[in-house]
Image 1: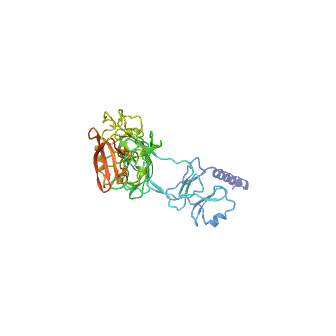
Image 2: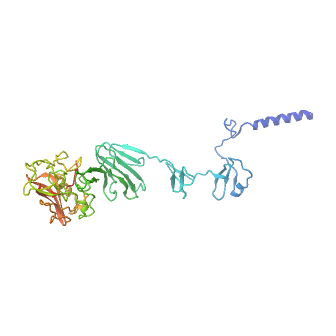
Image 3: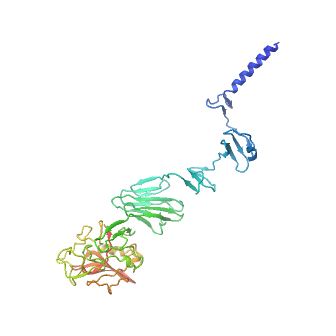
Amino acid sequence: MLNNKKLFLIIFLIFLGYNSHTMAQVGIGTTEPDPSSMLDIQSVVKGLLIPRMTTVERNNISNPAEGLMVYQTDNTPGFYYFNGNTWSTIAVNWTVDGDNMYNANSGNVGVGTATPASTLDIEGSLGYQVTTITAATTLDNTHNVVLCTGGEYIVKLPPAAANTGRTYFIKNINSDGSTIFIDGHGTQTIDGNIGYALDAYQAVVRIASDGANWYVIDQSIPITSYVLSTCDGAIFAWNDVTNPITGKTWMDRNLGASQVATSGSDAWSYGDYYQFGRGPDGHQCRTSSVQIGQSTTPDPGHGNFLNSYPLHWLNPIDPNLWQGVNGVNNPCPEGYRIPTREEWVEEINTWTSNSGMDSVLKLPYVGYRWVNGSFNGTGIGGEGRYWSSTRFNDINYYNLRIKNNQSPQIGNAGAMIGYGCRCIKD
């Protein structure tokens, strides 16, 4: 038999060996715990269950260590850890469903802030997906900011019904001025229209879906400026408008007008009255003086309205002064010109009523200025006369005539009469 001393030594050695093993790694379900772990639990049929307790029980833990974790069973159940000062939840209330992730909580989400004041409160920079396209494209959920270049084409929006709340920023960066047409998708509209045209370089629009159609939330259309040589010396500024049927782009107001017409009799929208073929030398101003006689040069050298009735104001006659953007006396700003007779016909054939105010051009009833400089009896507020650049004969040139309750007509008149002008983009 072993004596007491030998028995004690054996027991001590066994205990020492066991204690040294427990101070190393422990494996449960494995004989080879991972070298980086103190405790490695492996199973394919069971999980790890940590202490479960109520809020009161959790709060009764004496001097909890930083990092201590429990599962709370009441109030807002979930995993909680002690951060050194208080108990915090580590629950993440996001649901992953396929490629989608969502949070159904009624509270706010903060990025860069612990006190979000909105459903999504981002205190920092916000990044957008920017895509440059060069040809016809149907937008989808991979697009956000869309830059359009490479010429004229159609950008098609996705179905509004399947994209409630979706918003696109679309910008025209065609430096050559090519138009980008935006299609609302089939029978769906954009602000009630069949489409939207970004017809100016650097024009941009933000469009959103309400679940049925698309709507313009805001837009920015660069304003082109042109300083008139006379009158009040003000800057003449305008925006472009495009007839969606003809595709032609026009100024949105009469040459010299201070605003787009709000009605057919809006005097601020009448603009200036030009004698055919003359440049903006001052004669077009409503209050310009009248001088009897003709000029022998395309530039008379003064700003008087010439009363040369029944002759042309210019002798010898030059019928090419308003022909195209390079016409000697083209009164329109660079890149614009007086429309031809055919262009007026094409325009009025798209109208759904006799009123020029119902068209995209918003043409007011400017009347005209008679050869003696008078406006008496010339139909101001009740009819409108607008020059074309097309010649009828040596003295007379075609013009558009609109009047209340009458169909638009193409007539002709002497070059010495003062008519309104609406410029078209070349």
